[in-house]
Length: 247
Image (cartoon, rainbow, N blue to C red):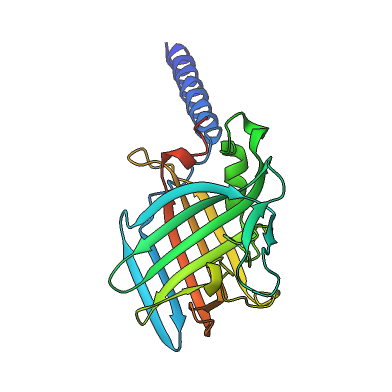
């Protein structure tokens, strides 16, 4: 009888050890947890003339988009009048698409444009590029500043409007009829706009994508007075349309 009890004990111990080993193997095969990416709090800051302007809050960012003729030419009806000209698109199939993000507050105001030339018919819609093409606008890395946005529209990149001390400044030569102020090409060669993060929100209670960027730029007012914008920082959340899982 003692031998029989000993055999039962050995079998029970063996079964327990086998179950424990299987449980360990099951746990070890479990995939590591993916960190939850939450919705960010929209915010912006920039410094001009030694003064820093900041703003932040949930849902502070407003989105819009549109398109203009790309690669436009300046047409002078009278060559003696330097700034009395028209802008004419040179390629009817080409369009300058822009994604505009605006943060407006009592302390800081900014428009950020992501701009890129596309072929109108490429995605089936008349001027709107497809989602995959739009997402390329937000590629992590450095992006040039488009110096002739809303003017000749020949350059891809970024464009910025800001308000400082009650005065509006822009980073690009913009058409303004006979009042147009032209800054010579190359004025943004030492400026930077770097997207440091672009990630899809994975929080089940939110949607969209988060973007973070840092930037510097030469900006100027309607009279052509130039300022240096430094320490620029932007953090925004894009709506569901820019969720990479949408069609």
